[in-house]
Length: 132
Length: 128
Figure (cartoon, rainbow over the protein chains, first blue to last red):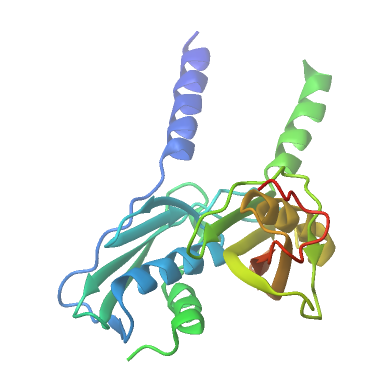
């Protein structure tokens, strides 16, 4: 009976870990941002494309925040997926937008996860032109 | 129960090693969706010789673990489906990108959905 209870608790814990996804946190004000000489609306669309190009499924798409998560995948060794990323936008005028990117890793499958900040910014550079 | 374990767990493992995400984003005006299996032209290495308007940004992202690669053939079906859903008659400006991370092989296909000028569009839904 005790072993059955122990297995049940373990199963619930594993399911809980699987269900949990990390929430990206907005970088602090002291963190450097990248700046594009483009209007905020255009940069926001580029952020959506950058996330989807890197395998993120968009979960939130506001004028000032685009957020998404990568599906978990099992693998031979460590698998992949499970990360979440957020792209925060801030207008600095009609043709200038400041961008901050942050990736969050989930507990389940963390060994197979990576930081996607640079990949996301590279994809935005490809779409908008180089950032400042 | 023992035999089922040998069937169920490998099946679950295989199902969980591939992720395909397809989506489209309207560039300006939104057009009515066409049937997901509509007839849509792919212009992989050429440009249409008829007047057209770019209407959507299309993207298909394939990731497979176990070092399994993907290619154009494995993604083009979803690309066509997204093009149809965006209301496009054709697909141009196709860009492929291969990358990898650990055992995961990543393939991204992006393109632009286009709509032919209705006076010259062949075999499309003229009612639309």
